[in-house]
Length: 418
Ligand SMILES: Cc1cc2nc3c(=O)[nH]c(=O)nc-3n(C[C@H](O)[C@H](O)[C@H](O)COP(=O)(O)OP(=O)(O)OC[C@H]3O[C@@H](n4cnc5c(N)ncnc54)[C@H](O)[C@@H]3O)c2cc1C
Figure 1 (tube, rainbow, N blue to C red):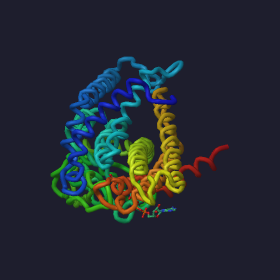
Figure 2 (tube, rainbow, N blue to C red):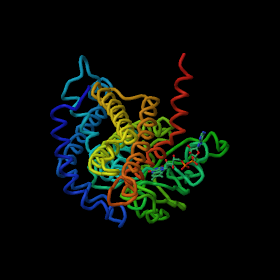
Figure 3 (cartoon, helix red, strand yellow):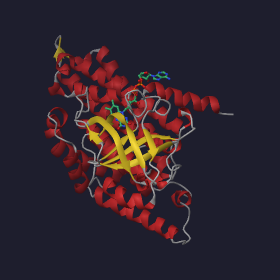
Figure 4 (cartoon, protein in one colour):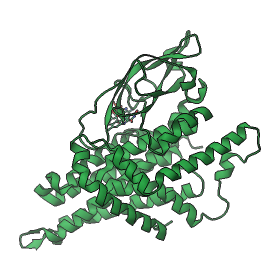
């Protein structure tokens, strides 16, 4: 894939039109005045039929799983997904549908994508990959169609990059088939408003040392006794993505809330495959930020006159614009490669996804910082929007694994090769 297909360009233009009409006018309310992001996201889902598509795809998957449960012979999912022969344009178009909204919205309000991605991709996605059939039916459809808001909670006050090693949250068997949950989670996207929460913790077992405890997770509903959701934090950027804390104090849950309804249902591999999907989405967000920063910078360089000439005539400014274009091309190429891989029915490895995330996040930060510089004093003012792009870009180097953690993942993969 070396360029967007005709159909993708058509959808991109429709999406851009929607963002400019429905989102751009309310960015200040979303970013600074506490307007929650969910209504406008639902409007987008409805406008583009994304809720119906997600619902139909969910129903198809469930029908397949029910057929398997009845003992009917169905091709394995990996076989069903695998594509023989060259990748078709239809498959490329379908893969592009996942990323085009991310790119287009990030041009104006990246936080909306963070809120949507965590609810649909992380929370809904985790239940679809690790939940039992009953759990998928009960929770996942509403998350995938954005009828309900989801949060995915692993980070704790003393456990961030070392998410598994330092985790203190616990589940204790209650002796009647259920569990008692305790712990604090922080920096949780959608935490303040989530209807459905995935709480990741360690199983406390008699005679098992803390470091060897099993990782388990539970699906919780807002309002459960003992569960408290904080108000949103004030943040540097992505104000449109509410981030908060969760406090669990002796929350009693039945076995039916244990992910996969098995203590082995959500091991480290579960969390790791979630990381991989999340990292790929970051590159699409970076592309949106970089595209917009470059467009605004080129326009300003042509029109801002100093020393009797447009600033774009000065080579120091030209170098900034040229470097921005190189970064844009590189990120776009990585996104195309990702789309073609998905269209072939495959996935990026964790190391590939990490490499893409590391590059895209750093490039987005550099490009948006330079965009502020091109605008001079005006760039420092909210009205010009480039300072928002810069603040929105910074988070890409921190969440979904910091830059440093991506380096560790890439190097580990390189050094483990035979
Ligand atoms: C806006 C926002 C939204 C978020 N949403 C969610 C969410 O929905 N769910 C969730 O569970 N979490 C979420 N997080 C948490 C996020 O994933 C963590 O902040 C991130 O993983 C880093 O952890 P930390 O903040 O504890 O930093 P730390 O791990 O304390 O790191 C501090 C610094 O030390 C570096 N460092 C740490 N270990 C090493 C090492 N071994 N080698 C080199 N350098 C190292 C880090 O790279 C970083 O620069 C969110 C965070 C933010 C800011």
